[in-house]
Length: 166
Image (cartoon, rainbow, N blue to C red; front, top):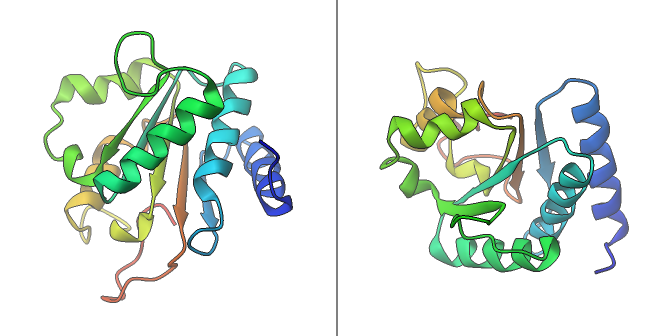
């Protein structure tokens, strides 16, 4: 698939950011601009450069989850459903609340690229002020993921709380 100019520039900027030992990257683009396609291309490049072992994606709903799963499966030309042999999986933010410590060990034992779609649903700068989903990110992902990509088309929250990882 041919990327739009902004998608190519974003992928290149993220790779440059990651190569400078920066682990968190934020992509702000309008709804429907193609953030998921861009994210799948970034994941493919990280796999091609042997910089990651696995991809985890989180989003606010099953509709987003299914779109991510389809896009990543097509771009990476493999399963993206978390079963043996797949290179990643997509979950809802709600699912994070049910994961036990053995799931989070995946991030400690592997080079995992974690992608957050619609990150504005998750808030918190520290463990003093997060919402439930933001707390899971701060506790289990922020310092453990090899790289993260946060994506949003809405760079603010109506409650004015800070967006996690941004």
